Amino acid sequence: MVFRLSASYAVITIVVLSLFGAFLFWSLKQSLEINARNTLADKISVMREILRERPNDQEALEEEVQWESTARRQSVYYSRLLRDNGALVIQSPGAQDLIPELSRCPSPAAESRSIGETEEVHSGPGRTLLIGSAWITSGAENPVLSAPQRFIYTVALDTTSEQNFLHDYRDKLLMVLIGGSVVSAVAGTYVARQGIRPIKDISAAAHRITASDLAERVGSMAWPRELAGLAAEFDAMLQRLEDSFQRLSQFSADIAHELRTPINNLMGEAEVALNRERTSKEYANVIASSLEEYHRLAELIDSLLFLARAENADLSLQKSWFRVADELAQLLSFHELQATESEVTLSFSGDARLFADSTLFRRAISNVVSNALKHTPRDGNVIVEVAAAHDAVKILIKDDGVGIAPEHLPRLFDRFYRVDASRAAATAGTGLGLAIVKSIVDLHGGSVTIESELGKGTSVTLVFPVPPAVKEEMERQSIPGVAISE
Ligand code: ATP
Ligand code: MG
Image (cartoon, rainbow, N blue to C red; front, side, top):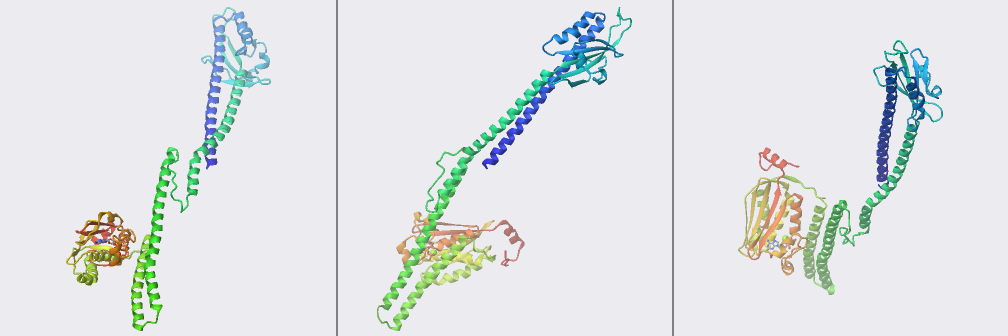
């Protein structure tokens, strides 16, 4: 990661510097060339002026060609004036060696143009000349020469210093490029290291955290803004882990506790029975009461197994269509005996069609109804109401029993949670009933809520959603009660 970041950083710098340098170099070269061409044009224009206005002024000619040109320190130039037949009129000292013969010079610019083609010539070591030439027609009113004459004027501007300047500039640009690349690679590595350090800190913190030490948090450290969100998420995840880990530990402790009591009972009974010789009737009594305890144990284990499988989503739902009223009628007939024994009226009303796992559905309703029956005294009522909303089926189980104090309500769906331990001993619940109801409803994507008032009664609402796709199917299937496997 550090390498990749710093490498891309360096590559970007190199590309940007190269493009920038190339552009600067090109534009400088361009303007120097334009400058040199302008100087050449200037010289040509001076010569035209002289030949047109004062063609007999030999002095002016000499001054321009022989003195002016070589006396300069800046923009030294050499020039040569030829007649159109190639005969030499005048040339600067040294021009003979420096200006190539006419056939090798760029073709002269027409009279109308200030300058035509130019050519760069390297003559001698490290000497560069820019050569251009032009046609010049002398003035018509010439007292010396009877008719206007045509000349070819060639000027060679010494651009050696410009060339050197350009080379120097190019070398400096290359140095900047190389230096810049090295600096950016080093700086990039440093910056990338700095940038990545907080991530390393988070991973070090993650490394420190073990199952026994989930209390560690990273949010309090000073994070850069971009990572503060990650740190907060990380802490939230730790909080969730810690919570579920605590619940799991509590659950294991509860399981151990719940299993210990019946096993102690069984052990006690067996020990007492073995104290002395017993009659076969007494042995049969011991076995019968043990069997009861075994049933309770088996039930407890079954419930725990169910919860574990539901939690791991290991449970595949066998969904089918059914009429809620059919299931309720069947289910309540099981509870009828319990209801008549405690002289509680048990009834149901309403109907709906539902697409759910009917076995689990019965198990959930049965758990709630049996709670209601258990906690409703003589002459009470337990009513089950079914209502079909547009995207869900609601089942309300209402009793006018003892009710539940508000402080217990939030924890009722916790595993092994019982409102009153002493009362629980009398009614012998495991405290898993509502936890199972919740996991069944969750598996169906629904919800369960409980409302209660002490001394007035309790009502539990189960909501089973009807997904839109299933609802469509439901409307298409006009025949009620037809089972469609999912
Ligand atoms: P199990 O259902 O496993 O035999 P349980 O009935 O004790 O055991 P839950 O069904 O989870 O456990 O119920 C939790 C507690 O909620 C119960 O101990 C009971 O005190 C209280 N409770 C549940 N339903 C009612 C009700 N309708 N009226 C009064 N209290 C209730
Ligand atoms: Mg119960």
